[in-house]
Image 1 (cartoon, rainbow, N blue to C red):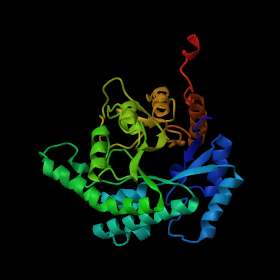
Image 2 (cartoon, helix red, strand yellow; image 1 turned 180 degrees about the vertical axis):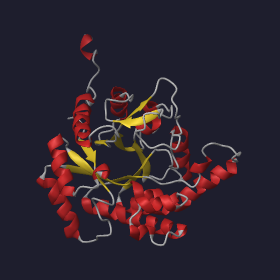
Image 3 (cartoon, one colour; image 1 turned 90 degrees about the vertical axis):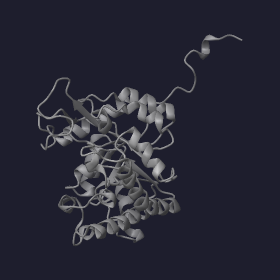
Length: 330
């Protein structure tokens, strides 16, 4: 049986959960990945609230494998400034005092693990933020001690979160992504080491964020076979020729045609999904393939539908036996 194909709802946060479920079913999805804070209020502790979500999913014959808290997770380790006010709920932002924001975001992350437990899922996808992302280009010179301080800060802030996740039997899957403590293979390994290979810490594999950086996004799967907790299917295009705006983005918005790279609907970029599926088969990943749809130049309903069709077409199960096993004779 092929892996379930789900739709991540964060990009549909302007619609009610029921409307998103209706559309996901119509588009052909097997389930959804619920995006916070729009489609789950983790401050709720009453069983009836979570049962209502499960009943709604059942109504549309949709399954749930993960919930995601990218926006709040970003505030755990980031250097907080006015940018975060736009992405955080008012009750997390508060008065904007950075340490207060960090603490409230941490509390919300722990509440998210409890919400996952109430919904019957064992994976929370999200971001961590990073206090050292602004050191990416090492000039003025950045010392090893400065970078180590950032990983120590990540470990100090996230280990208590991971401990609570582990108590509940829930895993945290960091989406390896620019602006996070892990954004390529090397930094992902360092993040794991920073939290002493905590059993509740792993990765949400998203090839798009690796591809345009020049990172071997298929090899990433082989490097962390036991830590791929969840998979985002997402495509990206990068140019074969020089552009006005390079890999760092030039302070122009996503979708600008002058950029070297832009996210695109699945199958319209440069990610080789065939090799990804083969690698996932090799490591035995049987979880969902979740479409995180982003394409600034395309209608999202058209894109979500064609992306679902592509994932179902490209996915396949590994063989149960070697293809040449029938050649031999006793």
